[in-house]
Image (cartoon, rainbow over all chains, first blue to last red; front, side, top):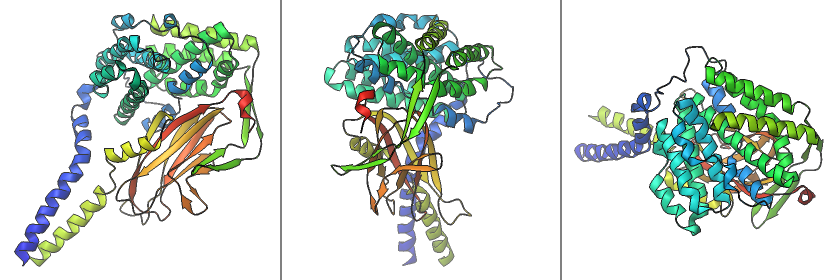
Length: 308
Length: 151
C-alpha cells in the first residue's frame, strides 16, 4: 500500500518539479550568461554610487511613453510619409560605442514605429536589420526574431502583427535590461526613442503646423523632467553628462509652457459589455509659437548629436 | 515510512503553491486576443504570492504614462489556477479612476479616455488576498482631436 502510494507521490513530485522548472528555465539561462551578455566593451558603468536605486529607476524609466502613440498622431496629421527625416539605416556602422548603439537603437525603434504606421513594408527590413545589428552590438539581439519579423514585413496583411511583435520585442528587451540592473542601457534606448519621436513630430509640425502634434510636443514637459531624473543618475559617465546637459537645455526651453487642469464630471459608459471611463480632470497646455519653436530647435539639436 | 510519505505530501503542497502562481504563454496569448483591434502598447505580468509571514497577498503596482486625448484599453487574463478573478484598477495617486470590478461584477478589462497627460498607477490585487497570476495588456483604441473631446 505504502509502496504504491510512495511511487505515485514520487511520479507526481517529478511532474510538479518539471512543470515548475518549465516556467523558470528561461530566466535561469538568462542569468547564467548575463554577465557576458551585458558586459559592455566601453564601460557605461561607473563605480560611483547611483543617486537613485535600480528599483526606483525601473519605475521611472517605465514612465516614458511608447513610440506607438506618437506614430498614430503622425498618421492623423495627414502629412505624407517622408523617409528623409528618418535616421539612415546605413549609419549603423558609424555607431561604434555601446553608448551610441543604445541611443540609436532607440532612434531606429521610433523610426520603425513611424514606418509601420504608414505600412511602408518596402523599407521596413532595412530598419529591422539596423535594429538587429545594434541590439546584437549591446548583446540583447536575442529578443528580436529577425527572420520572423522579416517574414511578416514581406506580407502587407501582417503589418499590424509586425508592429505588435516589434513592440513586444522592445518591451521584453527593456524588461530584461532593467531586471539585470542595466537600467543605464535601458535609459539610453528610451531616451533615443523619445527624442526621435519628438524629432519626427517637430518635422511634421514644421511642414503642416498640425495643432494636435504641437500640443503633444508641448505636453511632454513632464517627460523632460523624468528624463532628467533618469539620465542624471548616470551623470558620472562623460556621455551621460553631455546628454544631461542637453536635457537641461530642453528643460529651459519648456520652462514657459504651462499646463492647467480643471475638474469636470467623470463619466462611466457600458457599451457592448465593455466599461468605458471618461476622466473627469481635463488638462490644457498653454504655449506660444516662440515657445514651440525653441523646443523644436532644441530637440533637433539633441537629435543631431545622437545620430551624427 | 509514514513520516517520509507525510513529508513528501507537505513538499508537494509547497511546490504546488509556488507553481500555480506562474502564468504561461497561453495566458499572454489570451489577453492579446482580448485586446482585439486596438494597438498594442505594453504588457504587464502579475504574480501575487504570500510572503512566509503574510496571511494575504497585497497588490502589484505599475506606473504608466498616459497621454491626453488618447482612448486606452486595459485587458487582463487570469492564470488557470487563480481562485478568483484579479482586480485591475487605475489610480491617479490616491484617486481611483477606473476598475474592472464594478457593481459586484468582474470584467475582462476597461477602457479609459485620458484627458490629462501624466503618470498613473495600474494596481492589481485579489479581493480575498489569494495567490495567483495574471497577464494584462495596455492598448490604444483611438486618438481624439481636440474637437472630438466634447463628450
